[in-house]
Length: 299
Length: 300
Image (tube, rainbow over all chains, first blue to last red; front, side, top):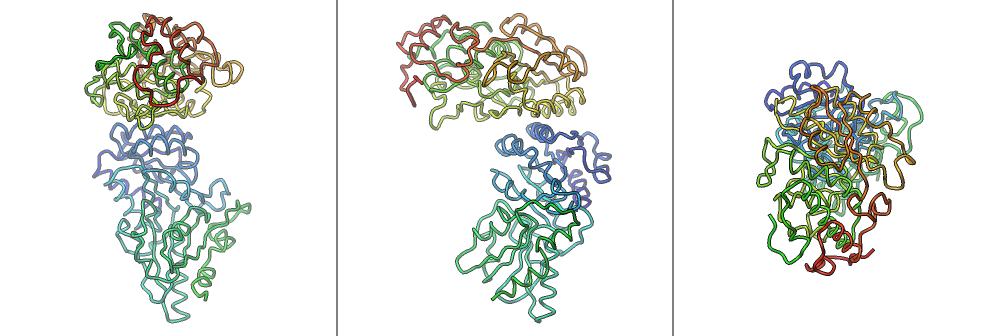
């Protein structure tokens, strides 16, 4: 996803002369093509995320659209007050980009798990929050953000995520990425969409009744109407690599009309103390195809 | 400029010198803080002379066009001390002096921590340690686009406890931001005690020098010295400038000076009269408040 991001950003930077990339001394083998093509619009701010974000706000106040880029919690929690006060309060066009959201940096340990970011970013004013699931959604998200500069947060996976679908239109509502029938739908945000699709596939094989799947890259701003396509189902099973508090499932549970049940699959809010790959930690957290199937089939 | 008013503090003779601008600013700040029952008059007074010289002699600004593209940018990082900045901005014509009566009142844009909703204010602060990094971003933009305008920012000494400042202090010389000027209001008293007792900053000038800034020290109440220093920036090509201004908290009024208490306390009516008297702005209204008070009484 980070490769799709930088390629999309380069494309957009060719079209939008105010796009600027500010990195927190991270992005080795990722950001170099941008720096090479746009040296006057690239800055390595060093290992100093508070200043990185404040500098980006200052650049934005002069008409630039900076993208701050770092790993997991570093560009978000480490400099949260700069995002809140300097960027959001002033409505400045800074896009905060976190690569390695969720458990993507699983074996790096808890410091590198970005699992509270949606809750925190959703609580900030004036902020658009996007959480793409695959390279295609990432490309569309970057195009959307550069054409409408404003305070925004882009939550990315890491590298090697496969293309999961070709549905576009992330600003219009949840993306229906797999057709199906029945009263239950699977709904995911971020790269865990792959697990939702695998569950739907297996459900279809086992029952002959395919389960529809929605991707929700658009997290904020939203209203209940934005999710209207979801309210046609009796039950929604949500998946997210995020703690239950403040994430997709809780948001949908709060917006769903009476008669729509939201069953939430998310990470434990307890800190993970074991090392493991993203796949291992998903399994350990119960964020699996089997769990999704169980919730889909629940009577 | 000022609209006609019966209030003597709002109706002060227009300032024709930086000294008079500082005096009027102090008088109005005291009146605003008193009637809104707010705080931070001590830190407002310690930087009043620095602000007055900036807005009288140094900053290229157009009060009738606050967003003029070629203006110098001034960022108040110690946003809690904004009362005197509002007073000076109003006197310079960014908004009517009469609006100062709304300071801290319900529904007013004159927040008690500096607000970008006020004409002439570039950036809202209040949480400490935000101004310098933001100033670096603006200065970097000017540097990358060959703009001639400068960025000035005012920090408190206590504020330098915040680590975010030191990130910015590392950053500015790295990017040769000689269009950036940081002014330290070094009054030696912070929120709960003397700087030397809380987190000693000395040797402050040497710290900035070690971080590759060009540094000068000045008496922060000597208008001529401040003017000479700030008229000559950058002092060294390629280096950001840091003016360490030795100041006195509460400067200008005897009973306010060097007293931690006046970080917090609002002057009551009698104290306000005494302040205005010492400043030579006699309160002819019997409390400095002929305009209906918007909020709480001025006695804390």
